[in-house]
Image (tube, rainbow, N blue to C red):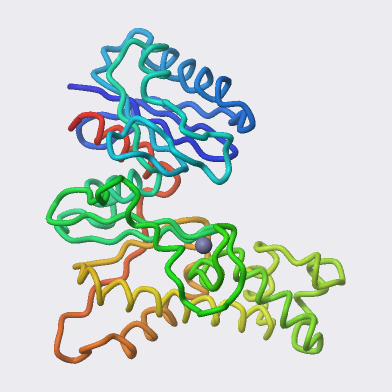
Length: 314
Ligand SMILES: [Zn+2]
């Protein structure tokens, strides 16, 4: 059975696994990312690959990188959470490990993993949206990963949702991820707690007393206890996610959406409202099939499983 290695490189950790043809992880390793130093990141990746490849026949390696990857799938042009700038990651890592290497954007790798082995199995047209601190995305179009001309497509988080809206980390105003992500959830909860503390009694108690102290897991906990401010923050995020999905349908007309990322772990608190908003705001509703909105199934390993499979198909 041909084995490949998938590596998911995020701002805080490097997760690597040996993956078989059926998407099963047969060995796994996790290391902290030395994010500030590109040389050390490359060596960390090289080390985990060599350790996993010991006593195994490995065909190729796929790297899922949290950054803008070029169309040749070898250079990371820019990464918001790592020190990569025009980083020749493919060459550095293949020189270190002596195996064929392909580099893919991490959200693309995740979309591919879910399309092949997860919630999107069997769907030829699928859109994956990862809702975490920001929003990432991936498109499977007619059975293949769609990257765009320069490799940088599917950055859904930076579609403008609100003209002259909130400032985004990308430098623009009003990006979708400023309204529909984990960070947006926290901002909204803080805003409500500041303006109407009477609605946020439980939330403020959990968070330690002041709106600035509120963090994501505390909004989740307070919402589970019925705190009105926390529930309102979830509701706002749910509707904004639904709005973005209706916009994506207008362009891409997918068979299904797969939603993943940290915020999806509390999906029971918001996904019904997203589905409801989506169904009632879709352009042409009633005269077209409604794309299914599913939760990702592979969890944190979707990226490495997808990267490993893309390496096999290089
Ligand atoms: Zn932006």
